[in-house]
Image (cartoon, rainbow, N blue to C red; front, top):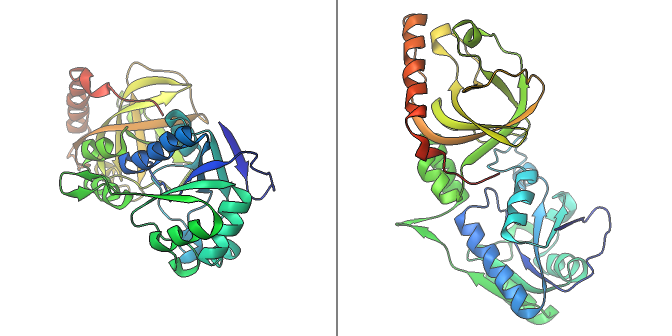
Length: 313
């Protein structure tokens, strides 16, 4: 898979089929759209491609300083490559790009830069300055500039349209199983292991404290069955998100107790794969009560191996 950037002025050398969208999460709805593009690209002899903004559009449109994300750019690249995409074209979403009219965006970006012969979008796709362009207008521009347009219908789960917004809602509710089902893989965050207060180690349950690399959406506070990935090896783990009310903390932390693991990983990059919400982050009267609950949590992990049947990053 090739990755080209708008800022480097690299030219696309082949006629392309382009999937357009925000693609945060690359959930099952996104995957259906992208797979449609890939299938059509093969039929037409085009290079399959995806246009990605390497920063969140909200940071420019609404001036939101740190929009919450479901997937980092690096995660998107890995997922798109696994789907079979041959080219990713990235660009920074800035004031200049934001102010392009729909026609300017189609001509300057899709036609001139990406050599688009086919464009695949979702039913609700908007583009151009102040989102003035919709799928009907995109089809008109396709006729004018010489590219076909395929509009993909929404993908449903029961009565709900699968969307990044809906998945965020599920994560905030702690419904990690349903969120993972709609993502098509477990929800994953990544960061660096930092030194904590070492209370877990003192109680016999050492934890890897995570400093996030990106502004991920943080799931509901509580304890999760998880996998912690270190150097491409997955370990069974128990991950706590919260403020550790037993010790009267007031700052949110993410800590992973990794089973059968005792290596020094301070400063290392790790990934946490969330599999199931186990219980709330609650206050215990004594350390002994907390230790007893931890033993119960760990036992539940060891007795439920089926939950670890999950896909890669």
